[in-house]
Image 1 (cartoon, one colour):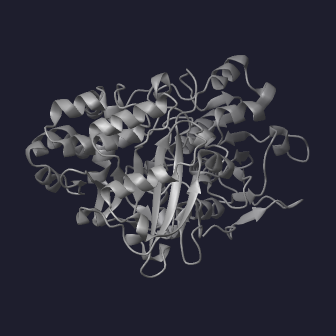
Image 2 (cartoon, one colour):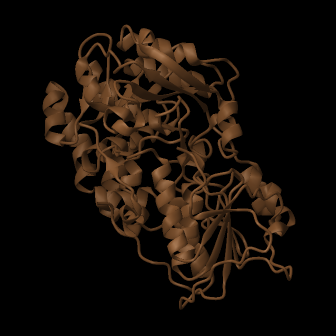
Image 3 (spheres, helix red, strand yellow):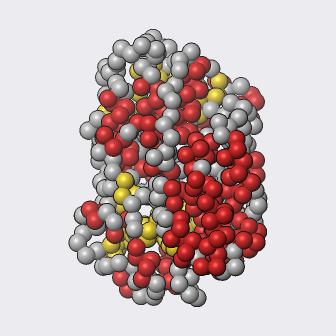
Length: 511
């Protein structure tokens, strides 16, 4: 449920800033604008280094895309933003913090992923690589060759994949093995390696997390990385809702003397000055590049302002949350064991749909991601009922009521689905943006991953987080991009600490 976290504060005049005398950063102040996973991660990293940190959140509760609420009625828990967290459990920063100490629990479904088809059984991604390969039959050996090395090297690959790409990697051989497999477009790689439509569709659904046309180069990187994550660490959900991740980060921040001030919109960085007019030593912006330009004004050098102003947002999401009178009646009953279901049909259907969204058109059969969280986290739904989370990739800022498209896609693979709907909440791209200003046009990855923006985020520079003296961008528009892992915030904080002459804490490998 979304509620004011007990360790946050509403705006109050004269509230003293809690401090903590820690060697290194003591005496420095930091302000963070935005309390999404990256803003909170940056705040925690700075507070752990001894800075006095205040996070300003415009909404009435912290969390950004991590908020949860009883949106489908009493006894329900709905994730308003992100719902499935393979890179939350894999995050080196979250692992280093040990957020389980603050009550965070990861719930692992029986199957990380299923991809149903109209003709034939669903393709299943098990935690176990060998079992997945066995299920894939004639394509099993090819799946092992493609994904297996990334599973074996996962602890080496993740820190590099979740950071700036324009740097010397710590494990160049492992990263080269991984990168070479991902250079080709996912459509090309799937057709070259796999003989069965089911395996091709499974890989295409994984690659669709790039939110790019599947015929683009490098989309296979996403297919391999997301597939390897399923085998190496799973695709878990947070028990009780994604809000639990935000709550754990806020608890860690508070434990180190920081605070979150809710209902505190920042429209000008001068608002962050102290009573003597002094700006914080560090200001972190968990915002879009356009918002950073609007906030910072003349503090940005012309080249920085120009680079940020050229930022492009990508396709949007249309989200539907359902309350059902029971489980989804999948045609292949094994799909009920999956936490996440990729709904979209064959490789060809997915490629067509993703291509249309990038040409500004809404496909009749969009790619739909479904999460069956309440099947594995029973506290999310009243007894006997199911809370179902779903979103579709659509054209940027689509204005149509796309709920029927989502219904129809699920009905294709689960006949009788519509008859099970008790209640629903539709969230258009405009609704998502109204709820969270960073989701421009429903873009949940912080900006298009197509073209140079995959590598040069948020502008062409070797210092992607640095916006000027004491000012940093820590949102999903900075490397590594979208996802709930906190790594953009962690890397931005590390850059700020180095600029202050302090040493950031080392990051732990994923567990």
